[in-house]
Length: 173
Image (tube, rainbow, N blue to C red):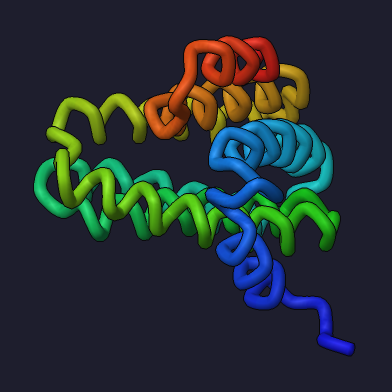
């Protein structure tokens, strides 16, 4: 029996994604649900140390937005990892790390083919700053909504059909 870890889940998701078992659309939908739930719980359960980790990642995103796509993506991932940890729910933390591991690979390939420009990264950093503000202010409903909408917007172009994109928008509302 394998010990529970995000690495084991990531391997499982990677093996299934793009097969009849698990589509990219399903994985993105799951990430929307997961991110909304984790953000809601983080706004209730965060510690000062976890909040500082989120603040630091958001600042790093803003500073990397101008010219460092890899650094920007790493800071963005650090921000979301801090949210999953602050949720206080290990299932959400492990699932977040696993799903993100798969989607991060897809995003890196997309960005390598079509790099994010500075304005896009700045806009993304501002959205995450709004999410941070909601979490810091313990506004669970707002944090959940911002997180769901941000993930849906960020990954919608990975989906192949209009029906999948419509379903994703519905989950984000």
